[in-house]
Image 1 (cartoon, rainbow, N blue to C red):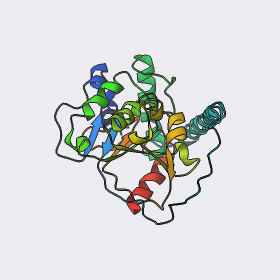
Image 2 (cartoon, rainbow, N blue to C red):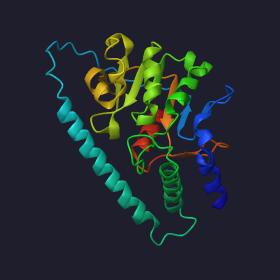
Image 3 (cartoon, rainbow, N blue to C red):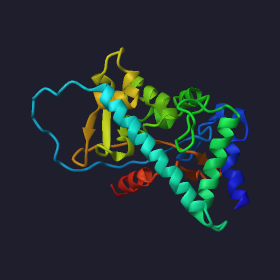
Length: 260
């Protein structure tokens, strides 16, 4: 157990490792960015044939305040549930119980980032995929990788530390596929730079922007995804094994992606 804790905590043991993520393009398909961004190349299809509706009725105006209020409410509710789960899973648990030691690792990372002031907003980072100082620099280094340059469609999670990756995807003329936060309104939305103007492209990288400018899609779309970018709380730099924030939605997405 101790060795696992050290391995997964090591990427965040020094501030410099958050800023020095990728120096040499690797030959393997699993890559860790600064201990917080982990992305993996995988091809799959969202395969069905139900899309193609011809309804030309104009959509109602997007209610941004209502969307933000609901998003904040659901986020707070989810963080509260995860905090309760961490207490429930660790109280009286044995040292070799995976549920227990995973929460120990998560808490160690969150506490370290806050105490060393390497965390970035939204704070506190507990029960989140934590944003960190240097996230944009890590995202910029992604541009140097052949796997990103050659990708036409990139799936990126909606968490704050991956905002820079979403921006680089859209400004690079690629398709951005992003999951609906906590799968609350469906599976995915897709955003293309052709849908946007220079004034709206940055907003389109946020949860509000995806809701405003993205196109919700389901299993009736055929899409070839070239690269998947995944946020993490902790990553083992030797194996690529990751821990998320303790919410099961990522597990469902992985199962869905692998099935397709």
